Amino acid sequence: MKIAIINGPNLNLLGKREPEIYGNQTFEQLFYNLQRKYPEVELIYFQSNIEGEIINKIHEIGFDFDGIILNAGAYTHTSIAIADAIKSIQSPVIEVHISNTFARETFRHQSYISPVSSGIILGFGMKSYELALLSFLKN
Image (cartoon, rainbow, N blue to C red; front, side, top):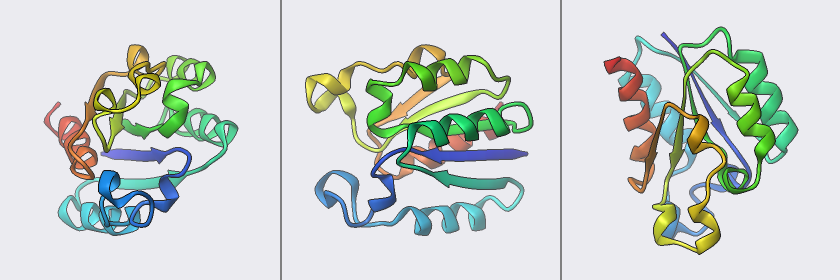
């Protein structure tokens, strides 16, 4: 099974950025732990602060991977282009957020990604990524 994890803007700062919301763990630490815990899954990780690079990655892998775990960060609330990219591929996408976006600022309550995703997992901290991975393994 091939699963890609794609993170959007500012998620390269996990472990440093707003630890009261996002925790102290870096994404690299989480990714390493997921690789060790699920050796049967071929995991790749991509992060970009640039919308077009995220779209290009979705296009690149969207017909060859069994699933994509996407935390589009702030682009969740603004990017029709990322939503259109998801609609154009075959790989199912699970939208993930570390925090409960509905318990935060009102602008975070709108997602352009949700209507085109297979599912949404949010509010479980970094564990949200593993929950998304498990959902692909259980299907």
